[in-house]
Amino acid sequence: MLFLILVVMGWLNIYAAVYNEDHRSIFDFSQRYGKQLVWIVTTLILASAVLFIDSRFYFFFSYFIYGLFLFMLLLVLVLGKEINGARAWFELGPLSLQPSEFAKAGTALALAKYLNSKGQELTRLRLLIPAVFIIMAPAVLTFMQPDMGTTVVYFSFFIVLFREGLSPYLFASGFLLIILFFSALLFDELWIYSVILLTGVASAYFFVKSRNIWVKGILLLALFAGAIYLANYFFLHTLSTGGVLIIALILAGLSYIWYIYRYREKKILVIYLFVLGSMLYVNLVDYAFNHFLKPHQKERIEILLRVKDDPKGAGYNINQSVISIGSGGFTGKGYLRGTQTKFRFVPAQSTDFIFCTIGEEWGFAGSFVVIGLYVFLLLRLIFLAERQRSSFSRIYGYGVVSVLLIHFFINIGMASGIVPVIGIPLPFIIYGGSSLWGFTLLLFIFLRLDAARTEYLV
Image (tube, rainbow, N blue to C red):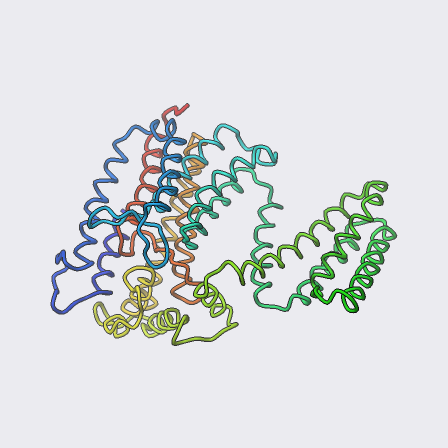
């Protein structure tokens, strides 16, 4: 029922977003709202077919389905149609299909099959690496298209790993990497390195019993840093202050490793690797940001972080979207009465920015209802996942929850101006066949597994 409510709600909002006075009928198939109705009908057929197939098919053919979608991701890089700078679509006559939308279901199936066979033993590195590979393979292929938005979605599967026994320390490390990523873009390199070093010193002070050991390590680091700084100042002239600190830290660590071995201070080693790894990561982020991202991608991140202000250029979409949502007030301007929507101030309003149509015409109250429906859907799926008797079904269920959660959060965050614009669709609501089919496939496989939860899969 929630699925149908969201789909119909999406259809009505697409009609509002691209409403044309010359084509008033919502059943006009020459317009996007008419075409979306066709997608909805075919989606219902797809959903019925998924429910009709025996649940054991999804278990026994998980790896085959995953491999098929990986092959499609490879093939689209060669034969795909380029749209907006990304080679991510197959053009089949009047249809354009995006295989990365369907590969999410394949990845969830393969991950569930692997973790089901290995149990909750993700603390072992040799068992964790294949699971990470299952996630990263489609992510890398999607990144090569390049489609940054969908690439980010694949990382949501790490939530599944956490639920199935991934160390909370590793999971927390992921959040630390996110913090360091944004810090690298916002703050001066030397300031970040200073904070990392102070964090390392404070950790040593509180967790290492022998103060004599870590004090000597700091003195050794200071000695190397001073020597390298002087050499760079008078002779080399090529190293930044951050480069001096990183080289000094590496040399100090190599020189001090016998001390750690002698006193068996594993905590010192962990702190050292944290400090060195954090510095290298910050340096890598800065390099990747300046050399790998395209100019428009860099602009979007800089505008989000308030590093750059460009309301008429790269920041136009976000700015107009926020204005649209804010102009709706509490109850909205009324259906088909949104001025921002009517005069096309927000580009891609029937796709990536569909939520601003909801915000303007339905207001805070309508937006709250839509968000509430998504939250209820996610909570319901978590409940269904937890009641599964099969580990495979439970793990797959959490894969569905993770994908929908990241889509829901990032898309609404994009429209609200709190996350970068990376082109992630709002599930079941935006215009487009690939995303609607992909989400339907993802969801209804789980509903089929839930319907057969009393059956023995293996």
